[in-house]
Amino acid sequence: MSNWIYSLEILLQNMIRPLEWMMLFVVIGGGVYLLFHSKGVPLFKIKKGFQLLQTKDSQLGISRFQALSAVLAATVGLGNISGVAIAIHMGGPGVLVWMWLTALLGMIIKFYSCSLAVQLRTIDSDGSPIGGPMYYMHLGIQKWGKPLAIWFSIAGLFGVLPAFTANQLTQTFMDVIRPEEMGNFSTFQWKFLIGIGLSLASAFVIFGGLQTIVRVTSNLVPLMVLLYMVLGGYILFTHFEAILPSFKLILTEAFNLKTAVAGGFWGLVILGVRRAVFSNESGVGNAPMYHGQSQSKLGTDEGLVAMLGPLLDTGLVCTITGLIVIITGAYTVEGLNGIVLTLEAFRRAFFGFGDILLLLMVFVFGISTLFTYSYYGVKCFGFLTRPKWGYLYNYFYIGSIIFSALVTVEIVVGIIDLSFALMSIPNMIAVVYLSGKVKKEMRERHWMT
Image 1 (cartoon, helix red, strand yellow):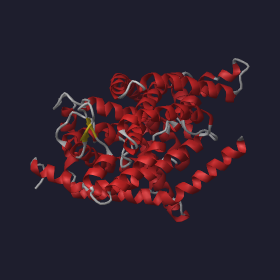
Image 2: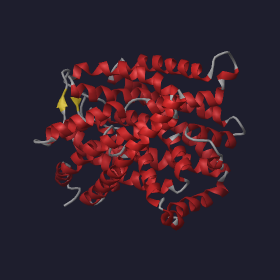
Image 3: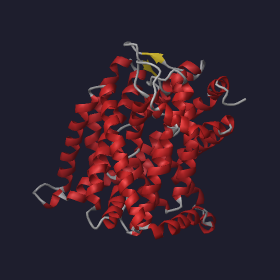
């Protein structure tokens, strides 16, 4: 088995390399273009975005708070807790700088993409709004929008599989509980059983449809984010003297001239972009699929709410995680990667039992992510076939959880990176092409001249 796993890892690495530069160009290049296109106006309206969470424009669809909670359920959690650890393990502390810069541009990208998801959407058979990248591509771009939408949807079928989440949840359980030491089952058998358990728990919620998913996530996610911030804040408070040196290390390593001369500088930048894109999904096109169902009538209102996502997950949670991993020195331990690295950091910071606290949070975050990602796949499959057939994707989704629990983290990261790159290319082309529609609404609201 180890031979085919190793072969798959190599194959995925070779496939992602040609797309890395393309993703860097479309996400960073597109984000910079949109920043200048908007003159940075949305960034000065963050307060209004928080205010909009308390209001609604219609009874149809889901509330803005539910939309943001569902998106955060997919991004805040393993993407921030485990993804940051992977980035630091692969590229060192300096990778955080490039994650921060990507998050800033990600706020602008989400403002535009989620504004378009409301401006260019259609109505479902029950009268509810239905939107997302495939819809603003198809409805907004007359000649070549449909091929882009099909490209995006096919890539999305694989990009939203629960590979990373199921894998890291399984690894967390195995590392903290160590069940293989308590019985006759092997490690492989325990992973298989955990995969079955996660499949059953996910099936219970996702077959209930959109309303069930957003109801569960809007109750779970805010509480877990608050708990994680409290625990993370405690660790930073008790290691207060190490915070400034850690920031200095991060900035120094991000602009390390020796690294640039050695040829690894752009590799560090790409790594930061990849992990930031995975963390907040800016440019990928996932978030517009939830925000497109919102009760908002004005696209730019929903855009302001969506913009809070990268601010909270990458700007806040990722920073806390990164600092904890660096301050505790866990990132220097050989052989640790992914969630195991973050578990080691919490174990060190909380007197040997911090990993158990993190296990509880990771479980809730991970389960919430499993719920929300399933709906992305349902939307993609429904667009490729018929909306009423979308739920059939859930059977494939549930089965993939077991596979994901068994393979290595390198394989699942490769699958996600490859799929996200293939999703971001058509999505960013469409967002930049249609950006004039968002700017027109901004002018009509007298946000800019």
